[in-house]
Length: 254
Ligand code: PGA
Figure 1 (cartoon, rainbow, N blue to C red):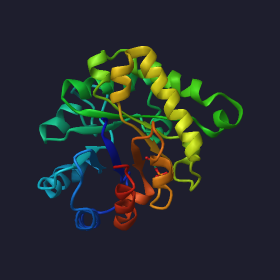
Figure 2: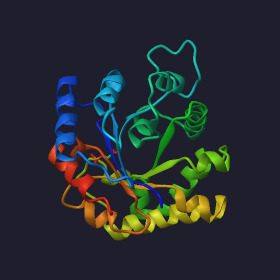
Figure 3: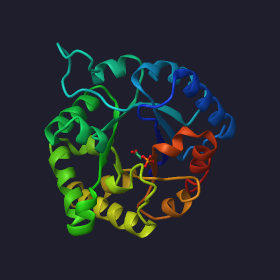
Figure 4: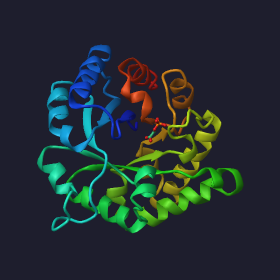
């Protein structure tokens, strides 16, 4: 059985004082995470170690980075290498969030390099994909997402692919309050899983958690997560509120 995951992405929000309170409240509201579930919280770089200490005694809670650089080391001021994340005990990293693809012009080749570096350092990447509104309205969203997967995953081995977490996040649903309908989301998740099955076989494809992201809230999480190919969510806005995010954790299928 693949894990069901509630992942928070704080993005560039919260002081450490606020973040610390949020994690403490969350642990109070959701103290016991079933073994089939995981709660992963992606925090800004300066908070990684502090946040990891806060959840260290909480089974089922993990801390993630929101990004890493596509080079191993060197004269890249301001960047953070996957090896550095590993050196402070971080085991997860978001790769290819649409905000970085758009604002930082991250390319598929750079994302492929980041994935390789994560695997080199035993970090599980949470690889994001998803179509913009123009493709949803006038194009072929599953073809678009399939190309994103082909472009960045093709260089990985089957063993590496088997370790991946994928997040399908339609760009038009991120931070907009517009959620994909559970049917739209399931259709895309199935298309992703079909691609994985064709490329890597059913055993690997069936083991990869595929999370939905885009305006997930406490009130819509259960309907989205109830679908067979949706294994939880990657949550931005609603993850900044402990009560909301605890409700999302509670909506993970048993
Ligand atoms: P949102 O963000 O939940 O605020 O739509 C999701 C994400 O970008 O991961």
